[in-house]
Amino acid sequence: MSLDLDQRQRAMLQEMGVRVWLPEAVADVGLAAEVAGSEEETETETAAAIAIEIIAIEAINTGATASKAPDSRVPDRREPAPPVAPAGLSDGIAGMDWPTLAQTVANCQACALRTGRRAPVFGAADAEAPRQADWLVVGEPPDEAEERQGAPFADQAGQLLDNMLKALGVSRRGGTASRASAAYVTNVVKCRPAVVRNPDAQELAACENYLRREVALVQPKVILAMGRFAAQALLQGSLPEVASIPLGKLRGQIYRYHGIPVVVSYHPGYLLRTQQDKARAWADLCLALELTQ
View 1 (tube, helix red, strand yellow):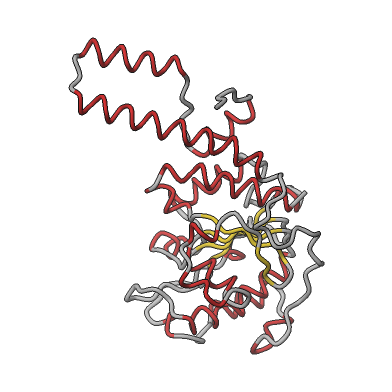
View 2 (cartoon, rainbow, N blue to C red; view 1 turned 45 degrees about the horizontal axis):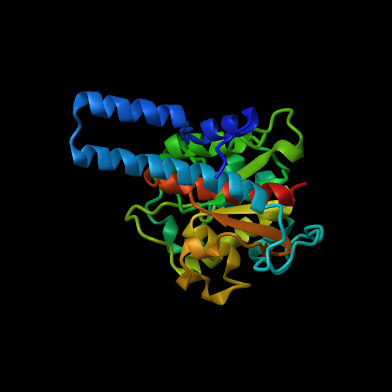
């Protein structure tokens, strides 16, 4: 196992909040524990923490390399066909431009998720959001912070996502950035009901009309599905049993959503609670990055 990381790798790890462990640090920890007379339980906990750091670094190293290697589990890595406007969308959604789509989302009464909502959560509502981008990031149903801000991926989860994208040279802020370095972010559904609950299959399907139009307008090269409901909404057409498959088992493969490659990963909110899975998330980002090049 090699822990020789170049400057770029270290910067990526720092952006994702993964602490880099070095052998010298272990010596310092061991010496401090000996001088302080730490009890056996404390030493065991320290050793376990160090082991997690080593596994994380090695997973990132091997993940970044493996993402470029052929994988027998990947069904198709050919250049995706150019995205086309989805057919059969209800209420004329297939022909909507950004302002019309935003207004329709704001006034939507299509399902029960609208009950008691304070405001819709819509990616294009952010004036800085790119209108076309190589990356499209789809998140989970809105939480309170997202509803309060009216935008996906808010607060600490949003900061972590921004750092993850920054490590790849990508930003969700449009500005003067080219579409190759831009990411459009959205949520799988746009409403947070007053009585918070998980959306059912019909509600996911109703809001997919808007998601499909967002995809057609953004014209991404890759879609990053972050979280269980995001994966379910995007893959239920091609993988009917997706709702019964653990998220961890959906990772590491390339799926398709109306011809566009989809990579499944963990939601940043989950990564804030489960630090050890950041390494796996980094491998997912490397896989998605490959598809944009």
